[in-house]
Image (tube, rainbow, N blue to C red):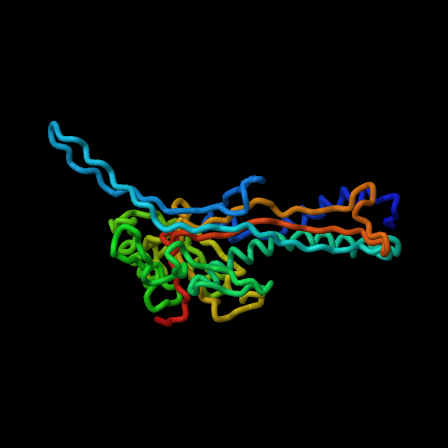
Length: 335
């Protein structure tokens, strides 16, 4: 079908459908992982929001007859402020494309446009894990992105601070082993010994996610340990696999990338555990990915070129006030 000015209205309607087709094709692995909590920010509420940890002491106290009940201690933890930013991209559909029988090229351009905002959101989320061992990185736009938690330390670290105690905790596994049965048990032990509230008391945090990059060896090894009907290390069939059903495996294909989204093989073996119930990582969204289309009255038609102009945009921020919901290993055997 040849596109002409007469079909502008239909093309505009189709553009929305094509946009959602493109957006739906994006695998939102990080956003839907459970590692991040999604917080919707309405309009007219400012461009910043603060997130903070607040802990109540872990145990009730004995009350003797006639005595006043002991007041519970409450400790605010560290806070982190996020600031909204927008990502956007525009594209033109030329007069020649519309009139010289290039309908498929038009469709392809709009479908591809529909995916770019969602992909950028996925990349930004994934890069919080990609760069979890440093305090900042410079993104593809040349902007410095702060990746610290509220204690001003990197997300994956060995000495995270507490506000109400001199104790510290770690969420980066010692010696950063590749995934294995022993490494998983080592990370579980680390979680047990380092799940502390702001008073330094031991608490219980349910970790239900086992996340990794898309490295085939890591992915397959995890599947063997989680889904095998027998322990992967057992010599005899019929041995119960203690890890069966214990975690939900989440594959994050954009973690092993550099700041521009290119392959970074040094991050290929990243893996860890996370808690969806107690997540302290937030994706705050003010503007979901959306398409700006050419209107029926031609408002977005370029007068000098005759191009139809389409654009996609989204507004959000990512912030990690605390580190207690993520356990991390870089898999490079570096202490």
